[in-house]
Image (cartoon, rainbow over all chains, first blue to last red; front, side):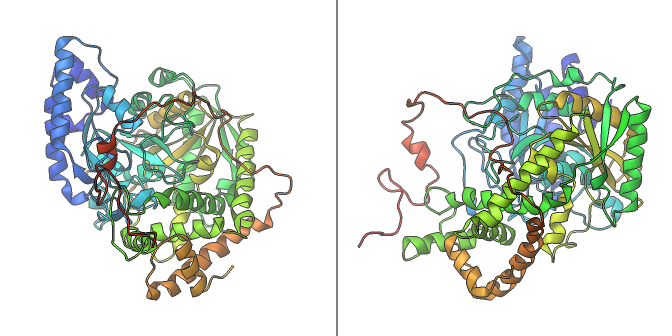
Length: 490
Length: 95
């Protein structure tokens, strides 16, 4: 029999249904893998007792013949940005020291009611701000593919712990959140599938907020089919989040038919940037050929405001972050650093509690929103955002999905690209426009770099059309036949 | 757009965030380079463009103005750094 930790959601579901193993056995196998894989630092908090308890409850439901959920008995990692009742929630920050939520986020609650088994809380960049998982108060996460490279590599970010856990076999799947690429870019760096759904598809209630008009939760999985199964369990309307879309959920798994013939795929010329890595261009060309071979029509399109997306993002996201993070004041939860006056206490707590990158973004955001600069920065950025969104609307009149690279490079070494914040921000050049427009995007592992590291391709879909997106992604996955694992020859 | 040390100190105060004096100079450099880079947006003509307020076309839902939750004082205070008699505490603010 295959090792339990080699299974994915779909194959584990089959095994559980056939009675080949129990949810408790599955949980135990992953708890052992999680302990053996501690060198990756993928988890901030391991919760083996929670996992075993939920696995036993799942086995009980099955034994009693109760209705079973879509994620019944599936062991997952929860990004430590989701509030989990009774389990430490840190957002990767010192400022949330000791914070144990008395409530459960809607997404984690949905997964729990679908039968999922939480193994622990996955590491991340502090407050999800970063593209390399090097800003966590709880230390850097290592990419499992480091073994192939012979040096420690970043897993990408901000959902780096989630990506490393799935890629390294320390979780069958994981939740991530994506504000400018934080699901897709680490998925690409770690050779897994990462789906950012349409803004409003998953509830943001109980997710530590970074930039509220951009944040969206999504699945990080080994296969496209798994992403469809997990999205169905996470998503849905939630009255507690006023931006959660009040629309019915389609059956995402059933949308994967394997037939994509007749669909039109757009190739945006603005994503072919000067000085782009030749390997990335070659992989993108391959992606075009693969989808052609599956019967898709390829069409050149233009998204003329693409080059302004990153600069727009780095006003909008820090502005919203500076407002959202105002709540960390040392009064109601988390870290308190005493001071002589109230102002003093605020300043001491926030000065000590936030790391360098978070402070940098709070300062940029505070400046962009400050009196006299608001129109020049924030309003200007929101206008450009409208233009970027209109670009996509025009393009989607003619195409069903858009194909681009996910990231401009493969995973880089821990410590590289760290001196210049703007150079680090360029990691998200292909993912940020989608986020600004609120559209769904998925990264599918598509090939290896010459150094033997995974590279992903991104597909972008129409709003609330994750079904078509997943179907095309599945065709791409099938054609790419990426079956490499870290530390092994494929 | 170039920020000097004093401006960074002022922004840090607006954000109620203590920044060590020796960090002000390097931060001024980093923030200035980020703002320089953002400056590229100014080359774009956005006259008559509506600033985006929301990516979704969904209008904000309304609900009855009724109490839906409450009576959970201990849960609310559970994570407070230094609660007293059912209240949060802060340094004295009124002389």
